[in-house]
Image (cartoon, rainbow, N blue to C red; front, side):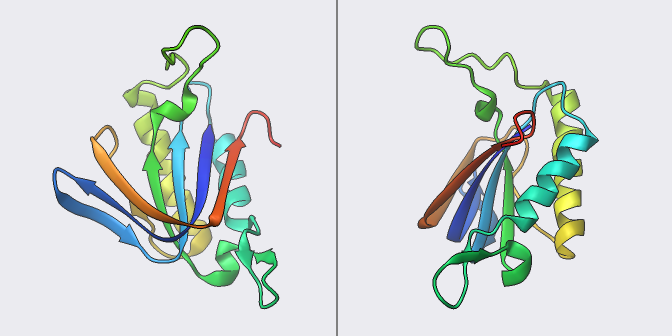
Length: 150
C-alpha cells in the first residue's frame, strides 16, 4: 500500500460538477492499493500518517502531528500510485489491486483513520472521475510505501 500525503491549507473533491468533500487545514492522503496489501499494512500506515510530525509548532518547526493539531483529513483512492514506469513511456498499473480487493481495503483504511483521529474524515468516491483541488501548505508532500517502511 502506498500513500502520498500532502499538508494542505484546504482540499476538496468534486465529481460531475458537484462538491463531494472538502476540508480545511490538515492532510490530503492519496491511497494506492495492491493485491498483497493487508490489515497489517493499513495499521502501520494509519499509525505512521497520524503520528507524522509535519505541522509547525510555535517556533515554526515541523514538530506536530495531525493528532496534535486536530486537523482534518481527506482520503482519496488513487490506483495510479501503483504505477510502474520501468519499461517504455506508458505507465503500467498491473500492481494496482482490482476493485473487489481495493474497495474494501480503502474503506478499512478510512475507518481506521477515523478511529485513530476519533472523528470523521472526508473521502472521494472509489473509481469516480474526481477533480481534486488543494492548496499544498509549504509545500509539504510525503510518500510512504508500506512494503519499504522507510
